[in-house]
Amino acid sequence: MIPVLYLSHTGASVGGGEKQLYYLLTHLDRKKYQPIVVFPEDGVFADQVRKADIPSFILNLPHWRRVISRLSRNRAAANLTKLAEKHDIQIIHTSDSWFNPYILQLKKRLKIPVISHVRNLLTSHQVSKYSFADMDYIISISEQSKIPLIESGISMEKIEVILNCVDLNEFTPSLEKDKRSTDDFTIGIIGRIEPFKQQKNFVEIANIVNKQCKNVQFQIIGDVLEIPKHQSYFRDVQDLVQQYGLDDVMHFTGFRNDIPMILQQIDLLVTLSAGSVIAEAMASGKPVIGTAVGSTSDMIVDGLTGWVIPEDSIALMDDRIVQLYKDPKMCEEFGVAARKHAESHFGIDQHVHRIQNIYQKLLG
Image (cartoon, rainbow, N blue to C red):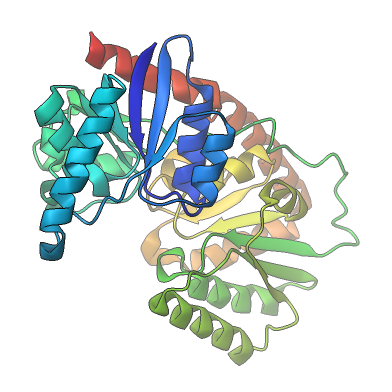
């Protein structure tokens, strides 16, 4: 087997990027590849990977560019090199570009190929800052994320767009028939409560929709980290809900580990920041309305499985939500089409196969 070293962004929590890495780790062809994972700290995700019987290690990997980290980063790089040598690592794959400086150190010292996975939208400055030009291969989760790489002069031959995947057996449509005639119409947004996820805009949208539709419920699904900026934003979201008098229809669920069930229970997913939740909702047979950011345009088939709204025209989202609310048949048809699209485009096996092809290409 060929040992492959993975650097995970975190070991302490499980977000969209961690879910994608877990799918890859647990579906690799173990007759060909042996995954080994390094986490910067211990926690829920590291424990999940260990339970999957995948060799895992905790190594402190301080921020490379901070002056205070100069000594500790060199020590960390040396420890990482020793681990890679001990396990005869043949290829390195980081799931977050934050670790690019570390894998480039290993490339230099061990003469092995390195891959960086781009899960966020980059600026040209970040492309340079994280030395993407020195990568042997770059995997982008959207066409939009690829643009700044190409504009910075990186060859298209070393960039591949591979969309996020989803467990089609875990995320499935509900077996219950549509009860729209008697039940509430439920609209959800899923993700950590933070400025990037734009829950405040979701409340603004909810306020307009609530004035036009009866029996509509809204769910903000996700936790908030103990980060002052995030905590302050959470309070702003709560204040806005009270300001608009939405307390009876806007529900904060907090962290949930039963997202497949949550998605079966809602009627529509709204996303203002993209992410793997789009694939999860579509696999669950739900229409998705999202803004044209990140992978949203690559995943939603506009007018067939949901709608893609221009970022500068977010007011259009209100109209689209009301349209689906008033047309249960269209909502159901979108959901059926969403599941079919997920089955043909977001399967784990297809996702992993494309990544393994990259490994084979780099290893000759």
